[in-house]
Image (tube, rainbow, N blue to C red; front, side, top):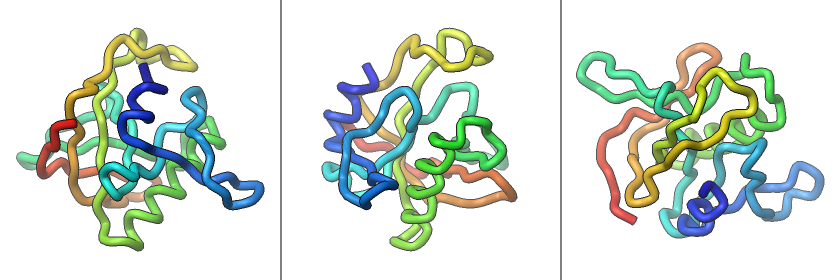
Length: 135
């Protein structure tokens, strides 16, 4: 499911070794750059979505997460967003068991992405949903 979604988004990430484009590792990476949308895109786990002050916030990175490969990838795209207009997209995923590590995907919404500004709050980065785009 995840591989097909990244393909649908025409997304890639960047190799830490040589800086070249490469496919997203769906087990350890949760973000990349979508050529289709011309912006970074992140996975948005359903249990990382919160309503606050009338807004929908999606946690897309936390530097305290234990998977450093995944965090480094997320932080690359968070920083890219903040340096290039501040927007990113996120697609919804529901985990079979949100407490499992690694998580398994129960379902994902392959029909749309949510888009909004990226904001940092301490060690965490969020996308604040402002609009949706059909895929």
